[in-house]
Image 1 (tube, rainbow, N blue to C red):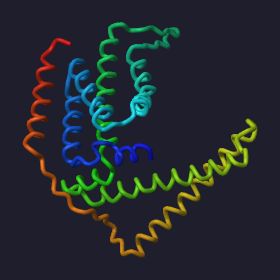
Image 2 (image 1 turned 60 degrees about the horizontal axis):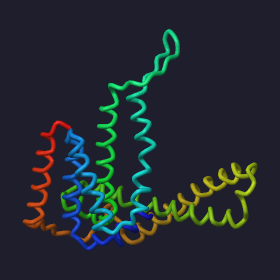
Image 3 (image 1 turned 45 degrees about the horizontal axis):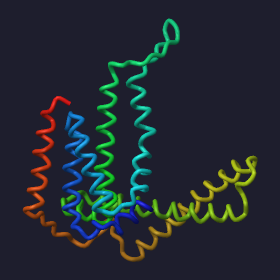
Image 4 (image 1 turned 180 degrees about the vertical axis):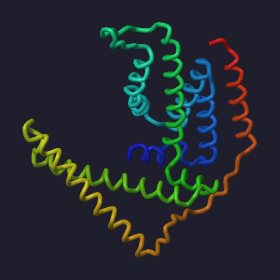
Length: 245
């Protein structure tokens, strides 16, 4: 997937995963527990600058990813500021009093998204799962996460191959036949993905899989300057939360 590709080729890929995860998680917790727009603005700018500036993620790609959750966010905001009354008659009105709350929730959500994007665009799934194992996360969870992650790649590979095959046969040119072509496509993708997943499981069994995924052990080392930087970030957020806005 594109996200996983950027996690491996980003300029921060060589940085120890515990350093990136600690910064991203502290910023995420700060976004969730902060109550001021100033704190949201500082966190959003910081995470975006690190993702685009330090990690060298293309600005266009980052903006496109930020636009993905906007549809859900707008629906949530509309649910707050727009009121609908059905009795005794249908009435729809805009609540100006709820607008500050809607802006606050929207800013909090986008700030949290920017923190998550920093983590997933700079830290590979392999490193993330290895860190979970280091913190003694149950083997069942890490194994399921690994298998689901792998099955997503299988599904995308099968879907991409079949879509290209049908495009070469001009299956989507006619509007009448497009629905039928899409139905055949996804039915075929489902069957082929199930077969590939079964083959993957059989290959794991042949290699002696004992229901647990094992990874090379990590030895995280949080440096003094990392602790100082995280402390400075927390103190800054606490100070910003004392502001009236």
